[in-house]
Amino acid sequence: MDVVAALVYLAILLSAALGVYLQRRQARAALAHRDAPPVEFAASVTLEQHRRSADYTIARMRLSICETLLEAGLAIAWLALLLGPLYALLSRVIAPGLTLSVAVVVAAAFVDHVLHLPLSLAETFGLETRFGFNRATPTTMLLDELKGAALWLLFAVPLLYGLLLALRLSPDYWWIVGFAGALVFLVAMTIVYPSVIAPLFNRFTPLADEELKARMEALLERCGFQSGGLFVMDASTRSTHGNAYFSGLGKAKRIVFFDTLLRKHTPDEIVAILAHELGHFKFGHVRQRLGLAAGVLFIGFLALHLSFSRGLASAFGLPDDPGVVLVVVMTAGAPILHLLSPLTNYLSRRAEFEADDYARAICGREPMVSALTKLSRDNLATLTPDRLYALFYYSHPPAPLRIAALGDEPR
Ligand SMILES: [Zn+2]
Image (cartoon, rainbow, N blue to C red; front, side, top):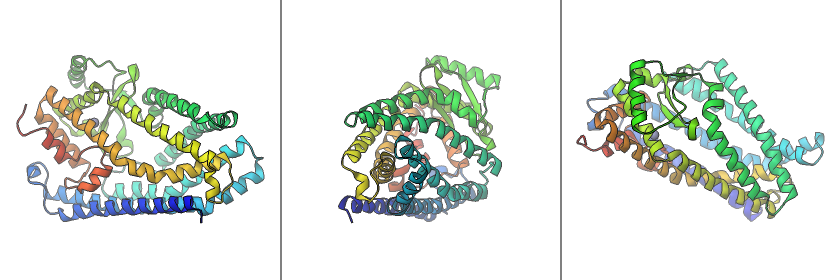
């Protein structure tokens, strides 16, 4: 076997082993503390609720382990077994050239997505239904799948053609053009996503509660926030998980509350959550996230360039078609992205602490504490995560740490 190929297989296996190890740790931590909620939550979370969140965490980890194993198995299968025959099959009907390369990537993405479907179904209609979160019907899911696939084709096909054309015209510098194009696409998507893409999947209505709206608008003004508005999203059509987020850039900025969150929280808590979202705006977190994504993209394009010039596909006994190389790089790059997740998640958690801090300065400690407690309790987030697992995978710090960071005394 080629040394490079052997290293890639090894990286895939080690990355999966690390994932399973961490997921098992997380399940064990939930089980070990199943009968003992942290003392500081004694008043706000019942033993029954705490046990339920432990059971949910354990069930979720079991599913995650299946997913990790499936992903590693599929990655190896693509490189060793599937990609060659897929290329051979397509090249019987499509002459070698740009279209064949694009078709390889599209077909591989399609097959890969279909092979992942059983686990997505198990998550939505097994796990989420069992714990009372799921509201999606098979029809909702089918429609989401179709819309997602249509959107993917609409964006991916022209981008792939452009990229592969650049490669053909300028074999040495195409990747810089590709990186610049991807960056423009990323920024454009950040701007149009809230108002164009997201409404294809959910309904967004301006916040109707006048009293709450007045309080929120006062807060927006106080923080100097100009936006496309405050919106309520009908998240309850799919799930009862509650959330809020801030998205977009410039005037396209939107603050979105899940209807599920508005139902369960007091006005004080909702205003505190808004203040937290404004914290993200104040500290420029969307821009930071874009900057980080740009860094990862740059490394990705550089890796792609080196893979093309060094003939990575032949290491796996595969044809040197650019479409094949693209699939190989994406498959072989997954373990590297996995290893980067502690860094990206660390930055994300730091941003959450900053936003919490900002919310406390605006609204005080109490509403923030009760909002975080409720969010964590209602989403069945474990209060006793494994430290190593959290370090690796948590994009938001666990509620006990966030509450501890808000301090004991109201400031
Ligand atoms: Zn946040």
